[in-house]
Image (cartoon, rainbow, N blue to C red; front, side):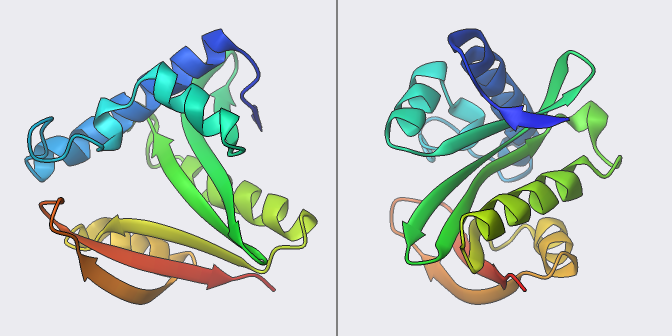
Length: 160
C-alpha cells in the first residue's frame, strides 16, 4: 500500500527508510559526509519536514504496518514533476516495490495533468540506470557538478 506521509512519526520513519536504502549506494560509490553532504543516505527528519513545507508530496510504501519504501514528487515546471528519493529497503528489494512506486508516481502526475516525470541519478550507477530505462525513462543529459564526486544523469519519461 502507498499513501501520503501524514505526521512527524512517519517523517522520522521515512528518513530512516531513505537513509538505510541509500546507504548501499553510499558504500558502493564511497560517498561520505565530507565529499557528498547532501546524499540521501544522510537525510534527516528535519530535511523531510522542509521538503514537505516547500510543497513536495511525500509517500510511503507499506508492507502491512511497516514502511519499506519511499518516494517524493515535486512539481518543477509546467506539466513536469521530479521524482525524488525513490527508496526501497535493501531487504525488500526485488519484490517489484520500486516499480510500484514509479507506477504510483505516474498515476499521481497524470491525475495532476502532468505530462513528464523526471529524475536525477548517479550516471555511473549502471544497474540503476538500466532499471530506469526498462521503466521507460530516457536520458536527457549528464552533468558533472563541481561539488559532487559523480556525474548526474538526468532522465525523464513522457506519460501517455
